[in-house]
Image 1: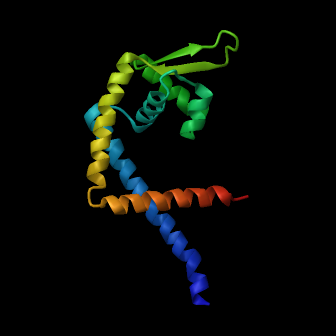
Image 2: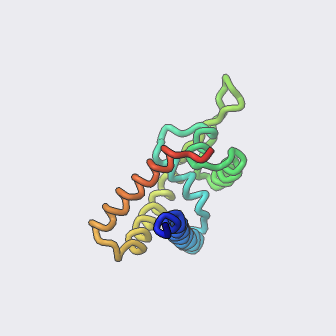
Image 3: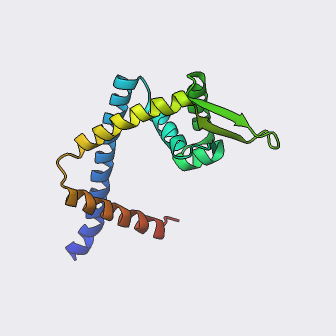
Length: 153
């Protein structure tokens, strides 16, 4: 019976380990982005999303993609516009709808940050073999699918 009781506790311990690892990585990224590029992780995330969609994204789609509120995205985008990294075009038929996209300066800036980001990730995961990385990717994909298949009600 003790095995059955420990299974939920083991899964809770697993969640805590995942959360700690995620927070450590995120803290390191935040620090490096500020130190090396004088920018924030939310700005980097917005620019990364826009880089993936060169034609631009609706603000509502951007907030959904980043899993943050429209208000949070609006604030970040406004500061990126002020810095000349992003443009916002309001839809003439629906003035509530706006598309944002990277400027040339934004693309160039993002590419520099992305190259550094890739090096940072490589360094942080340096002690994982290719097989371990593949296994972890496979397990995390399985975990995501499990979570999606069993939503909390």
